[in-house]
Image 1: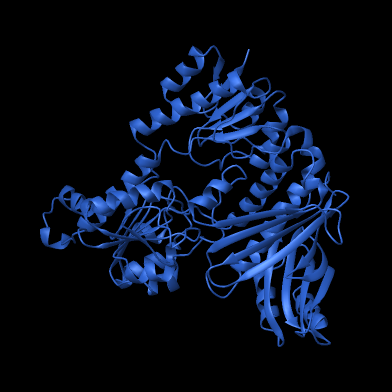
Image 2: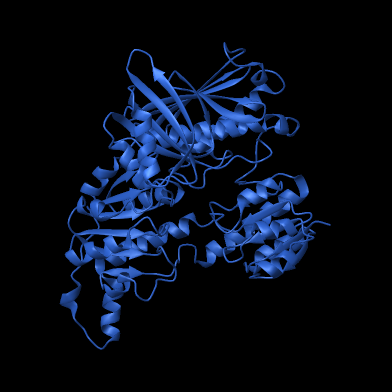
Length: 544
């Protein structure tokens, strides 16, 4: 019998659907780690919402677990990496709460425009001060939408219905192919300068953390009103408080904050111009019902057919080739992550416009060649997109790239001049920045062998300092001295010279973490053209 552990409270319709399908259902809501380890031991699937955390320790205790389904959008409370290592598929329900969250954003926008919560509090305090609550119409105003995913599109559509002008910024969306009629795609600075209202619908990633800061608010129209129903941390809360006090920002409505619940000493609590709600994005009867029913349907489908819908970690590589090609899957991921990090570190914000892949060697031709290339392509695309899309996976990456107008080019050659098998990846951005990297596997260990046509032999793990500098005596020593003065140890130095350019490319392997100030000091060194940090996970022992 297929047994399901329901480890969080869900609507009864979901539990009923599991039982109606003949599955054995064990409902134990809100388990901490210790009781979860006991309850998970003999189940085939686990259904969670947001409270219960499926940790690596819990997964170790799961003797026959095959599926974890999160009844919601993200999978923040599931250790996906640990699940993947144990062959457990993780799925979520990405669409069930999109309309609900979008409607909350519109409600917060209207409340901001007309001071609804503040006026309510005024009357409850025994007052009737109408003159204090002079609002503004939203008709004819400009709404800037940050992030045009599922929720952002619905917000934009609803705002158009309210006769607003809608502009949008999404770093992975082509300005030439807007996904929604009537929405103008602009860069981030243009959105700040032209928006009367801003609604945020972006994931929290390294690229989006604190993008609304002192500098960002200074670029906005005076009197901006801003809504965040996405993720806390995208807005720097101290900067927001300062902007509200100065009048640069007329008001803000936050359904999410960096720390939840909002700390008692938070400056957000002190300001009447800020509306706070307790993470209500998915809190409607309809959304809760849809989430429960869809999550149950996924589990039933998996139990009966083995198919996993909305998987966030399912590899599309054929089972019979997975072990043999695992090092090349890792290579594709690391090359994509390396290229994306270097381009993102450029002086100007960039949107990826093209990703090109070239597979050299018979390994990519024989035995499921098309499926092998598809798996490698999906892994590389996910790595390239991940700096701006935290939840992207190899399963969703091809779709997300097409949705954002990114051109994907791919070709194969049966042999390479120097290596038995090699992957070339080129990433081009609309800022004009490009990088071409190539790698191969020595045994089971991925290596980078070329950057922009320059031969190099570099590890693809840990913190790396990547430089372009004048090819002259003393440069490497100067870089080493800067790092040494900050207690940064060099594990490895790989260098290559650009022909006829007096420029060298360096990849410096760091023992431990490379701090931001060390990178800044290297960048300021005389003779330095460019310098950035690339942070890659350590390689799994099975690949080494």
